[in-house]
Image (tube, rainbow, N blue to C red; front, side, top):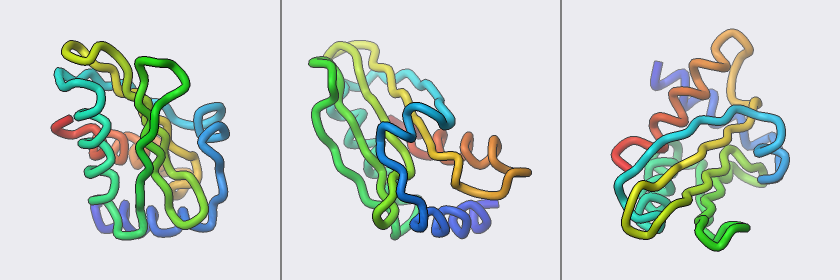
Amino acid sequence: MRFVAIAAALLIAACAHTPGEVRQSHFRFDFQSAQPRERAAACAARNAEGISTRFSTTIRPGVDHDTVEVIVHAGEGTVAVIDVSGSVAGSTTMRVWLTSNIGSKEDLQDYASYLANTIAKGC
């Protein structure tokens, strides 16, 4: 399954979604973290980059003052957007949005879930 997932992930580079497009019309998964938001964001970025050598990340302040945003890129396109929000030293919410251009339609929900869980693992 992992090989198929990574192979499909490599096909995403042809997509040119913006972070806003990914947020508006694609898969969303919510996770909780006990880590401060900056640490949880850095963890999610490391995990995303570990999925494929084609993935790179950008960490930046979010729109809200208590949010850190992680953008996962594959080439020119956006694969995922992760908003990490909450208190600095308390319960942190990680909201992971994924593009729908990540695999075949038969496996789409399972693959999106796999990617989101891999990104959030240990964070």
